[in-house]
Length: 99
Image (cartoon, rainbow, N blue to C red; front, side, top):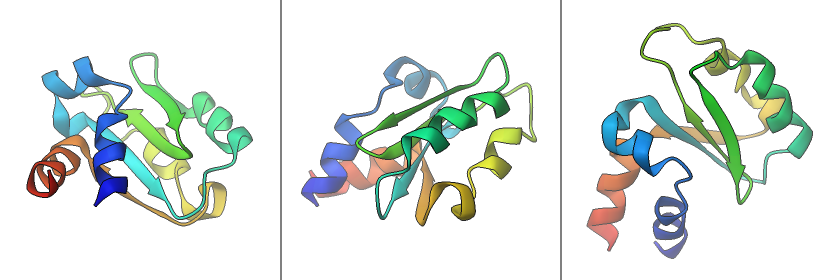
């Protein structure tokens, strides 16, 4: 529970999350994502998309203008390692239930 609350509190995109929580996602990693893999995701990001890593988890702001973002396919387990993705609305609701 503490880890999930820490994850939610560490959201690096609070303004984007407030505007469009369904477009902000986090890939919660079993082991921290390799720095070079996260850096490599930048090549797949559109001009209006954002990618960063916080505590080894990968945070992304997807574009509403691009329904099939290249980022989503690039964030696979072979490149990033084992993890699960959730959008901000889900992260926030679970944190509210736990908190």
